[in-house]
Length: 147
Image 1 (cartoon, rainbow, N blue to C red):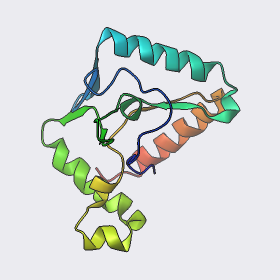
Image 2 (cartoon, rainbow, N blue to C red):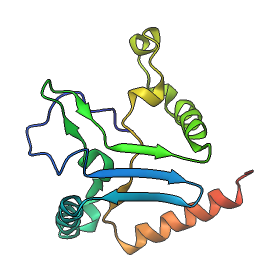
Image 3 (cartoon, rainbow, N blue to C red):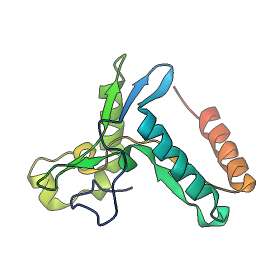
């Protein structure tokens, strides 16, 4: 799992945190994007599609569209959750990410959900075999679900 970025990267940033807003609701995830953000995402998708699928290139959409304050603090794009999903997502993230916490973070009262990068959509360029393997894993997880 990727930790939240803390220092400004050397590479040029994307269209910025005000060019993308994500919303999670019971119907799925919606990405609201400006024209500049869509054009930037297209460039990123072309970049990863040109790579060998065995290299597993990806785009972390929310992370890519983050930005930086003048003091170097990372700003994630807006992510809204509706229909009570925010508390469910936070609870699940805290449970799943707790083993990656440092003693210092725990002592400062930082939750796993706060320590790790914000909720994201990751687009990966993979081979058809990887897609099939993930589909099989999804089916197995769904059939074993108690939800």
